[in-house]
Image 1 (spheres, rainbow over the protein chains, first blue to last red):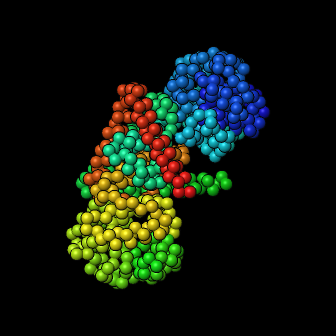
Image 2: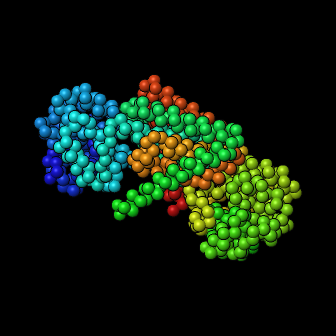
Image 3: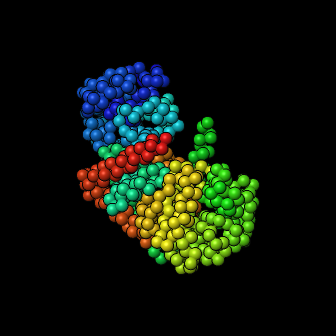
Amino acid sequence: MLIDHLSIIGVGLIGGSLARALRKTKLVNRVTGCNRHEATLKKAIELDVIDDYSLNINEAVSNADVVVIGTPLSTTEKLLPQIVESLKPGAVLTDVGSAKAGVVNKAREVMGDRLSCFVPGHPIAGTEQSGVEASFADLFVDHRVILTPFEETDTTAHELITHMWQAVGADVIDLEVKHHDEVLAATSHLPHMLAYALVDCLAGMQERDEIFKYAAGGFADFTRIASSSPEMWHDICFSNREALLNTLDVFSKHIDQIKDAIEKSDSDQLLKIFQRAKQARDKFTAGRNQLNNATE
Amino acid sequence: MLIDHLSIIGVGLIGGSLARALRKTKLVNRVTGCNRHEATLKKAIELDVIDDYSLNINEAVSNADVVVIGTPLSTTEKLLPQIVESLKPGAVLTDVGSAKAGVVNKAREVMGDRLSCFVPGHPIAGTEQSGVEASFADLFVDHRVILTPFEETDTTAHELITHMWQAVGADVIDLEVKHHDEVLAATSHLPHMLAYALVDCLAGMQERDEIFKYAAGGFADFTRIASSSPEMWHDICFSNREALLNTLDVFSKHIDQIKDAIEKSDSDQLLKIFQRAKQARDKFTAGRNQLNNATE
């Protein structure tokens, strides 16, 4: 048994999938869920995702050995003080938010002498679906989970959360908080902004019906992430505001370079941009294939 | 037999796949290939894509009942005069370019009294691969092919090309030339620019190695099209210059709206954009599923 009693605050896609995976591998004795809406918790019981639940956050937390916060980032920051006051001695706290500086700053502010038990985490997994109905035990298999322990983080707590994610099939790595937020702004937050902006842009065009009718498979792939939860992405934007605004600026400059090359009929410039991008993308694909072959 | 003798100028992914599909269904008696490089044609013979070949474009065209131009757009415009002078009486000419106004204008300029035999076409199919090695007979099954016949286009020629694409499994529709270019600028050309710009942008960042290392599945989907042929996309940009520059401007305004909402901490505005986009994307997915179910 890795964890005797696990509590999940926010039983959605991530929290629900983690509960399923840990219960399936019998590495947890009891999983308690806590959510704003009782209907979600009843659904989670019905789907055999959790063992029991409480609508009272203090009650849900007070007996847990590990507490996982699976709520959107703004909710996590709001709930943190309440969760901390109910943590039992020796309990370990982690979260699953896509940006880390905001929640770490909040933890420094409100956790006092319990700060060392907090291990910030970010599973790089998910689909454009959300909610406990979309959860499944294999969600984390062969996916990366980034932990961003900070100076005060307790080594034993860090090890426990590392083992928890490894036990459900994830490849766990550590990154420094700020570095995590910069890298994720580029690889995940920026692409989501582009997908949202693209779909919103096309939906506002006069020929919108035809545009969506004649869209090809590439378009479906490209815009899949625009079906992601607006509330979750709203929170990520504000939580990783600075890094995201920076990458949006850098990106806009690249779009301007393409526009400029087309406007000025600069064949060489346009070809160079496309060739550089293709080369980098092909290298990325080769790297992924290598990784996949290595884990087979 | 639908077509006795077919000639394909530019035996790549699209031309090669069409040749494979028509030969597989025995709707063509003989396929002649023509290409700049003999190695490609030898490869096409070896892969059993074509029956024979000629490096001389006039020789390749002169006996054909249908000539398909499968070259990048700038090459198509360059070759058009030479192809036209060798067309036998009654022959039908079509192309596969992703933008139509440029090639139709060129045809008006150089085809004289043969103009009516030209049926401009655009199969909405392909992968990020290119070249005859990547071709396969099922490429067009359940994919759309847009034809953009114009006022002078001969009805019999139009019907023959419609039947040719339907015979290889495609769903053939007609669009007016300008309308085609506007719709495709939005659904295909713009997303390709975004993917190229995004990958080029990330590849230029200091943390490039880590960025590509920690990129998730969504990123792979989102940037797949950045592996497309730079030469082909270079030609498309210049061929559909006006419509593409317009959509790039509209897109940039949408990115600015997102930036603005984040900068001003305008939660409502940001949520509204994401919600509108999600709604449109979900509707698009529902429409595609409906279409797929209907064709099952």
